[in-house]
Length: 264
Image (tube, one colour):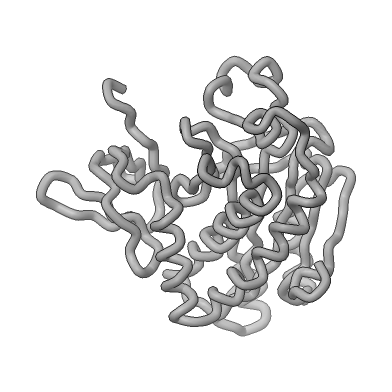
């Protein structure tokens, strides 16, 4: 992408994982800003090891290599950075969807009914950091945006009907995947710059709160040692989810968050 740090865009017809590719490139010394874009991933994955596949060339599948000067407690903001950039880009390319897309904390883009439009996965490469003797490891952030698939609910397996949606479904016509890629990388430049300053990171957390559909929602938080329910009442200055449970307040640094619908 000219005039941004994301000018080195490497394209693949098919690859196992763009995240895996960039982690290896990071270990070989690749600079911040390398982008890997694939028409198809044979081993694409989401958070908690979930898999996701779409027909080749239908959707936008990419990863970016970041080298932010942040500590372990702030690495989750790399996910926030890419999610916000994707939200910005969708609003530019398809303004008809701008008010219908939000972020479900911590890493999904969803449309107004809660169907998933995109997912983001960040992976810190601690091996690179140890080998280079540095405190801040490179972070690879992958995103998959449902651009033109599914075209209709008939394209989805039964278990995903009502859970996934594409931009094409939302507006009724095919969407230019290349235009979305260009807009995303352009939007990512100022967002990535925010990662490198205290004020910028606070701005990322504030923007997440503004665009987060989890706010005010009854949620169930699944953690390795159990689950709890409450109401999402805020995003902390560090970008963590604040959940009120009765008279207590809990801050969720990481976890699987489910929006609980009345009667569910």
